[in-house]
Picture 1 (cartoon, helix red, strand yellow):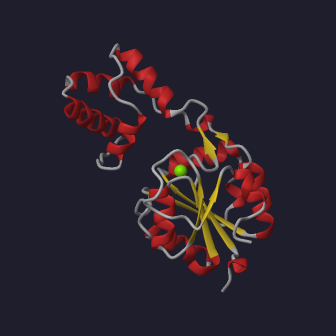
Picture 2 (cartoon, protein in one colour; picture 1 turned 90 degrees about the horizontal axis):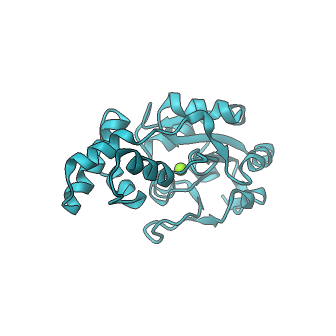
Length: 222
Ligand SMILES: [Mg+2]
């Protein structure tokens, strides 16, 4: 099969199709401010620990991450907990499209079958899809980490392939995370399209790299 035989496109949701107008960095700065603590770590530290800890609630997850960072830096754990508690979760209904994403869905949807493979809770992710009014674009919605293993586990991709009745070699997955999307797609035997972001490159080699969702208007695998 050649790359021109791609029939199906899987897409990630967060920071691929949509984003919050107020970034994680903004909300973290707000949290330090509200807690009256001088900023002692940034989003990079937060993301690094997020990948390594697990918890039942978002608050507990933040408490664990921030406490590890405080420990690492010899800071007062009380400061970490204060910041974890003042950090405000983003409102899922306030999401906005990334540039080019809405028209990319329209264009790709005319020539390919589309499915969503997103990490995140069903309720939160569904609220975003409703706010954007895009659920109808997708033949399958897979909420990895809620009903399935978390990407980069191949299981949510494999589940979606079977839900769509397609094989891995006729499917590409588009996403912004090298770790979750590119590595996950490869683990399931799919081609990958990486929406480039400032993240450490090199660990996983995407088949295609795009600078913005506008670049999907002319699919890079065609
Ligand atoms: Mg993402």
